[in-house]
Length: 392
Image (cartoon, rainbow, N blue to C red):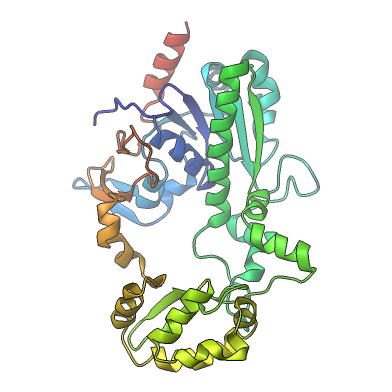
């Protein structure tokens, strides 16, 4: 595969001490934009995600994890035994010529190996060191174990996810992991700009808990403003209605009537124009307060026609609406295909698969898989020779 690629972050060297999702996702974002991301793995078994299903076989029987591939494309892999003083010493030399270190070990693990920010920044003052963790590098919870589900729980996110009368529910996407990865990549890019301007690196303490609180701005501000605890609303909205999922004759869909005009469009579409004058639904605030009553009125009407018929009706009126797609449906959607969000990728075992591309557009840059996901330790000799020879 041709690995020559010019992207916005070309020339940036990144060492990723990443496991499972948050660290590797941050690294993959940087790699997709052209950074030279080198994944540091254990020689025996590497990143635990290498064993996550689906595990697929190539023509010769070699297996590879599709989950692992999804967040480790465009990277190189080196295998280093961190318990071997000689290998650790060589790895330290790579850290001295890296622009960025990303890690998501428990706080203190890399420090004990001499690979913490305080140690590395002495010989590499421009180093950007991003530590992704559950609860931060210090504080009462710093050494508490963290996984996506536990941080969703402690952060409050699960308390507002699920049906009104049901139990708290975990978000189906590991948003604590991937949200932290997004924050990490954003902060790293900002710190790189600062380092290039000032010659000073930075330590980034990127916690999953803080990330989930950061993206819960509407829920936290609701509490700050009212003193009331935000509640689970299913697919509904706390300040607008009808703004939720409904069941058509054959399948579910969502409409989002976020203002008075759209509310009138809904009334006209369902053949109930007089609902506009119903005092229970006269304002957005009243509709939100009485949304259960409104749902009881609208749902029987929606159940009389198919999803496709309602989508056509609402689209004709310019009404925000959407089918509740499965992943097979959205990945095959013509608009997703037009955006080139699904692209081909070949695994190290020769198996052809697909991947979701870097999702945002930047003029002058077009995403591609310029490096297939790596085998464990595939680039060890190559990276040490290349990076250290250039620094000599």
